[in-house]
Length: 437
Image 1 (spheres, rainbow, N blue to C red):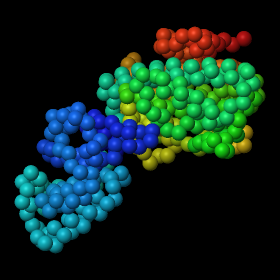
Image 2 (image 1 turned 60 degrees about the horizontal axis):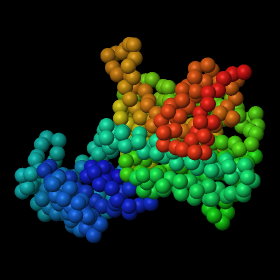
Image 3 (image 1 turned 45 degrees about the vertical axis):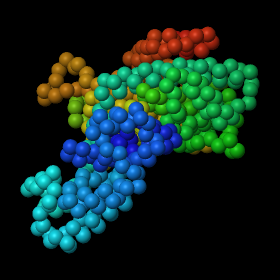
Image 4 (image 1 turned 90 degrees about the vertical axis):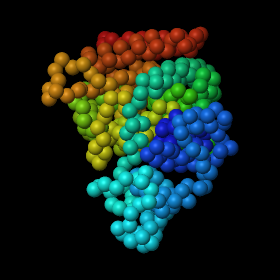
């Protein structure tokens, strides 16, 4: 996949909206690699980087002829058919069939670079398995994690400036559309160091539009933001050092008891997943119920997964890990993986609620290690206030309230140094501790 090519070669591009990748193919051999790309995009600096790494440049449209050549030489190709271009698979299969017809099914390969073994048949054949790059890319190294942490703090500063501006405009009774808000957020983000692009189309939904899970406002048909209804904003950015994805739900007026109860139960699920501790080799679907339990207790639920993998300055959605009710993905969560924590609740034709942070899987130092294995948990990457006006304190335990207060304390400590003036005052006001009356 394109993000695998970018990650493996430590390159980034701008061919695809929202994702810093370039149109390319890559063939990795035993002791060499060939990158098929439009060389007009390749700077002298990148050319030097690739040459030093032993990567040969080839024309983008010569990929299929190279696949045929490899088959003629008797090469075995590892192909992930869930993601590789179908034309490559079909071209290779046809070339293999031709090879066998010409030389017989027991013909010997002339190219000694490709060895024969008991597990690989004589002559070219495909090895159809998941790409080995997928899992390696998901396990972030210290540099990637540092970039993700730093970019999230700059992103939080831009968000604070945006929410401060928005509340002032609402207070002045300004009429703003959902698209106006998405555009203004982009304006604030674009002023941050290292900003490249949004990481997906901003989901800016007022009232009933917030209940449409993947809603994208259009200038001709979007709604004016209603200060008396819930407003859901799911957005993200691409920076040179990281990728962000955050959702917050707010009310500019007085929320109803129903809205507060639903919001608080979503928050309880968010906290439960954030605090989860689990043994190594646990697949994400095992944790999905943690985020839903508080909703299930009153017969509510949501129709999307709880968490997806996120790339480091790459695609905002990446695998192979996920946290979802779909049991098919048995990939275990591993140290260094990044996942989203985004439970929600959506009441058709009324409102939508979602609270989303990004988390990094880390080792937890538990007092016991039953079975002699590691236990894992999460470290937060996202630091931004959760609106306490929407919280029904009677539904929170003492521990959950402490979690929220501790989280807001960390938000202030980490983000306030990046702010000044009214945005800093806004952050102060929105990170004050809460107490039960």
